Image (cartoon, rainbow, N blue to C red):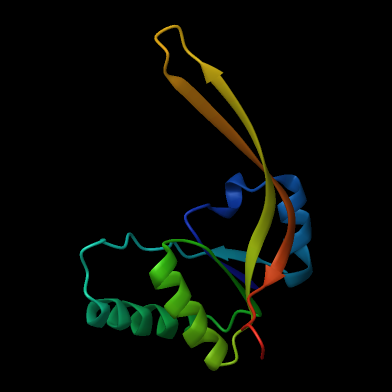
Length: 124
């Protein structure tokens, strides 16, 4: 089973991403939390401990994780310490920027899934 710990529910994944995830069996969504930018490091650590416990209780074969960077970094570090297989979704970004009549620009990006990549520690 793959645990999708992001704010991108499985139901809106591209066919290519769903096909790549199929090797893990069922995909179960667990929404990534909103992380208040004013939380202290101690509060962040408490959140990490709570979510790591919930994630590990699912006994997922792999966790696909993406979200707010500091929380994500601490969580992935904790999960790797605990022997959990954690991956991220890799994609290419196709961007079109259009200048409006008033001089402002609108940028539209489309992300095209390419693969899952395991989180690994540098040098280990």
